[in-house]
Image (cartoon, one colour):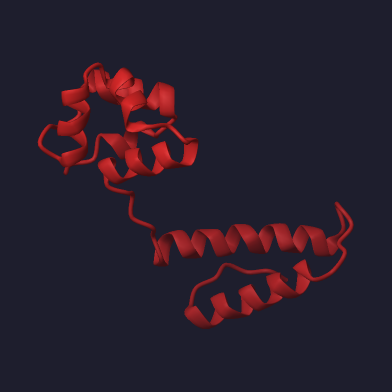
Length: 119
């Protein structure tokens, strides 16, 4: 029976079991498939609580997303409205405004909660 993960040792056992299940050719809706799904949820919750991933710095998130999408910094200027504004934002000399955050969220799909972080 699958139980909540309450310790590092239980977490390791759950990881091992999930790995073993993933090595099998599981049939959908089977007992083992259901066990893997439940284990995955429990592992994710344990990791979120014990190994949280910090949200990225807003400027790093913008640069990463530009690289991911193959968008140039010149195209970012078009999104933000002015070349000098883009340079000031990326260098950290200027903070993002609410309208910039909205545009970056809409055009680049960067989560607003990442862009509104203090920096």
